[in-house]
Length: 274
Image 1 (tube, rainbow, N blue to C red):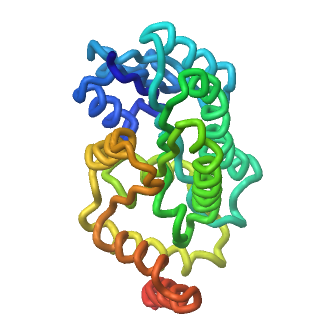
Image 2 (image 1 turned 180 degrees about the vertical axis):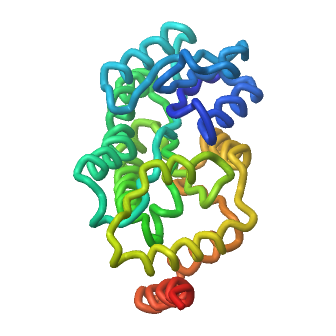
């Protein structure tokens, strides 16, 4: 029997590459997105079903799951990939921007997990892969709300893994660093600024991000790691991928004393202020 996976946010980037990767490995794929009528590639692949799912619409979540089960018979795994990065100055963010970031990156994941759990419990098995970020382990300037959403996702996923372990349902977290996707463009489209007092900070933060962009990993690389997480049959919770700068920051966060780490991060940012 073929394995079946449902992937959210499959219209581009990591989600699309994951759909293609799993399909190439012989899985049946339910590739979901907000506007499936615009998709022109995934719907040409025989073992991929493209259907609508908007993580801010619980009825569309339920319908996508029902459609996938009706089409393929069952679902073995879920990849929660849909999300975006709200960047900018927190003080400049509107209440709507703050709420939208949490609704998509946190509540959307929770609603999708809750909708699929009865099916997994009925089958006495299942795997949930939540795509987090390095920003769920350490923070950077201009990422206050994105980090807040990913820190919340990390805590939710870790606690959920304990709850579901006795039901033979695995929970995995994939933590990518910077990737060669349209994430940056999407983040710029919703960038919050416009307060002059922060201009020196924004200029320094921009230089820091520019220095971090060497050797970004590809969406295909992340898709391969998601596949590993979904298929390795271990109880490993976290899977990390990123360039050298990213991996050094992850190591520093995990191994350094808290104040030493904070001093290191402040110095790496402040050197760009001059």
